[in-house]
Amino acid sequence: SPVWDTGLAAHAVLETHGGNTHLLNKSCDWLSKLQIKEHTGDWGWRRKGLRPGGWAFQYNNKFYPDVDDTAVVGMALHRQDPEKYADTISRAEEWIIGMQSSNGGWAAFDADNECYILENLPFADHRTLLDPPTADVTARCISFLTQIGTSNNHPISRGLEFLKRNQEEDGSWYGRWG
Image (cartoon, rainbow, N blue to C red; front, side):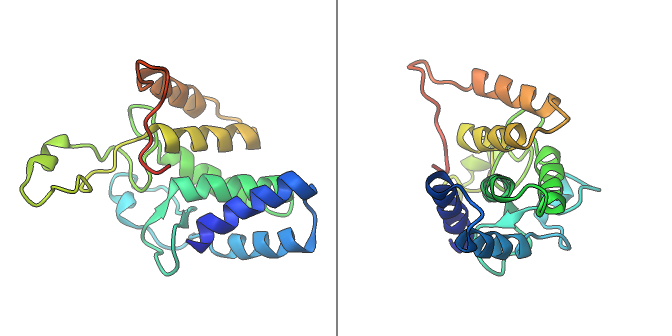
């Protein structure tokens, strides 16, 4: 995905060159333009009134932004130039906070989509009907909110509680998206 890959590449360049280069300005401007601000996808069914503000993993997918890409891109924009991208970052913050599930975690595309009985349907053998919150996505959302210094610490606290409850016995966490 160009969005995900560009977000990660921007982090790598920021970590090695310190930012404010033509290379980063070009990629961050490109990412900023791809923020979905006008279309409410399926996620809006559970989050009525929440304004769109995320990024999609791939091109031409305005109805399925994901919080994972949104956190990665938001962190890159914030690291590059928090003032220039302030409105974009704020909209991403609003959307990510609004997409937090009731159990404190974050899923990739939806909130509170974990009706596990659906996985018993014969055609659900790929286990893709649901979008439950996961440790990897939750951790990235917490990182984003912490990095930007959100004034609302409640979602961060709830996310940390989700991570505590979902830590494996050996100390690891299981993620779905890597």
